[in-house]
Amino acid sequence: MKKGGLNPNVKLKLSLPPPNEVSFAKFLTQSGTFRDGDLLVNRDGVRIVSQIDTQPPPPITPTDNQLSLADIDMVKVIGKGSSGIVQLVQHKWTSQFFALKVIQMNIEESARKAITQELKINQSSQCPYVVMCYQSFYDNGAISIILEYMDGGSLADFLKSVKKISEPYLAAIFKQVLKGLLYLHHEKHIIHRDLKPSNLLINHRGEVKITDFGVSAIMQSTSGQANTFVGTYNYMSPERISGGRYDYKSDIWSLGLVLLECATGEFSITPPVPNEGWTNVYELMVAIVDQPPPSAPPDQFSPEFCSFISACVQKDPKDRQSAHELMEHPFMNMYEDQHVDLSSYFTNAGSLATL
Image (cartoon, rainbow, N blue to C red; front, side):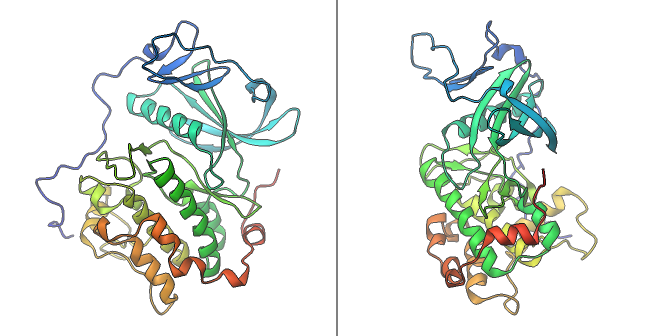
């Protein structure tokens, strides 16, 4: 394996738990409200309050149309993670389905910060291309987040059924993903930092939405940069792996890798020995930094598709196009006259959830 690609003077910023964890009890008020900075969450809901206000914050109270944990019934568990589970739930009075993310808060400091960040982003995001958060609660040691239910599961699930996705459908799918990134980057000043097939959800209406903001970074402006090292290594941009500063263009690298994987049915960064996989994470990271950027085979795909991939996966982030520029790329509109029906495609080709 080639060893010379990473600068020996740059230390990879691998996240490790701090030696002295802060007690979770520090973030609870006497009334049982979870408070972290300007974020307050209790059994009645979530609120973000000003830290410069000298007056005590008003209590969080339910509104007439607010969802309540008492008004939902659990149907089944639809996902599990390191810090909690996702349940399919149904509202008792309207019969509407939701996804309920339940996170036990006896967790390390870094995870608590990630959850706080996710709650803040969920609270402020209103976009048809981002999974909607209806309400969040803290009660009895757990954070519960009521989310829009996407009955098609994730793009990763869908790929297991179809193996590959053809260009017309890819253009329709990733136009929605780009619109979501455009909203996050330019309106909310958010870098997602963990864009991957399992964080792109689909439904029977043909909608594609971005989810999971546990490792997202909120920037002060559209020119902001970050330098923390979090997210999924496979789709991480070279500048992030090298420990350098990065911005919204790091999400564009991830977008290109996800799109190419959907088109070819295979992850696009190849191991040193074909068909043997990666020996360890470090080997994968070296390959992302050292290898030439991946490309779409020109004999299998249109010039427009190949050009779009190239615009996303340039090694130097300055050479990558922004979400706004990619929206104007010819690939995004070349199949519009075919009137692609993603609703039928997701329903017939995949395996939508049955209740």
